[in-house]
Length: 114
Image 1 (cartoon, rainbow, N blue to C red):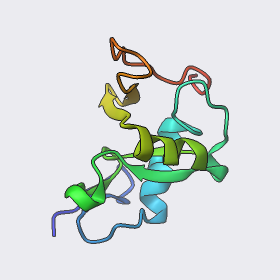
Image 2: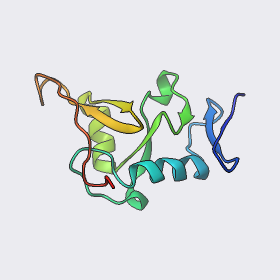
Image 3: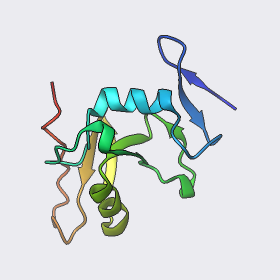
Image 4: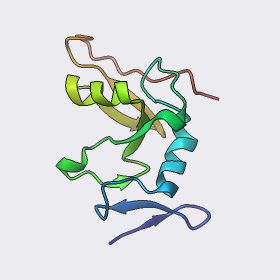
C-alpha cells in the first residue's frame, strides 16, 4: 500500500487501506480547514466530521488531499443536494447544484482564513 508522509513522518495518505480518517490525517485536515469548510459556516473543527471529497464508495482514497471538514448539517447537504468540492491551491472550493446557483459559481469559506 503506498503511503505519503508529512514533514515529521506522520502518515497523510493511506489510500484505500481504511475508510476512517486516522488521527494524523484528521489533524492535517484540521490544520488546513480549521472548521467546517462549507461557505459561511462557523462550526469549529472539534464539532466537524472528515468527509471524502471523492466518495470512498466510488474509489476515493483516505488522504488529506481527498478530505475536508464538514459539520453534520453540511455533510448531509453535500450528499443530498449534489454539491461538488474541489481542492484548489490547498483550499476546499464548493460548487453548488444548479437549483442553488444556475451558474454553479465556486465558493469557499472565508471565516477560517488567516
